[in-house]
Length: 179
Image (cartoon, rainbow, N blue to C red; front, side, top):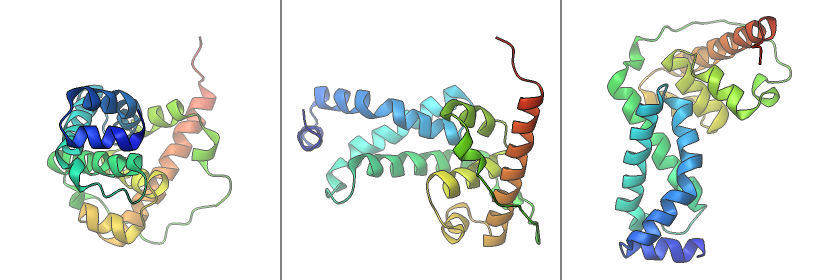
């Protein structure tokens, strides 16, 4: 079934098409949830809520841009809503005048599972800003609006997230897991 046929069948509340859509996109969207949400159970809940919103709002998809991107945006927003309920992002500390050496970015050097493992070790604010900026491509202004924080807090959270990730990678290299 083509994507266009799948969308049309889902708009008609066809349960088999909805199941197919779930099977097609849930694994990738679960990965998106896991980047934001620490526990597997919470990530699964957010995924289900996000895909429910997809089914509920599929008539709003106008066919402009990618369907997967539209689903991803809903899942990211659902993840952020979950985090807002659990965490107060306004309590984050603003840090000014931090120097960061540029070079090869850490995220380019790691496998996806390694990134997920490392991201799960970051504090919620760091992890959320890192995901929104590095992975989703949001600008600091947009992140500040989404999270209800200042632009400088967004920037400092990203800098601190990268520093923490670098330290975690160095610790990982120093104490590699034995198989």
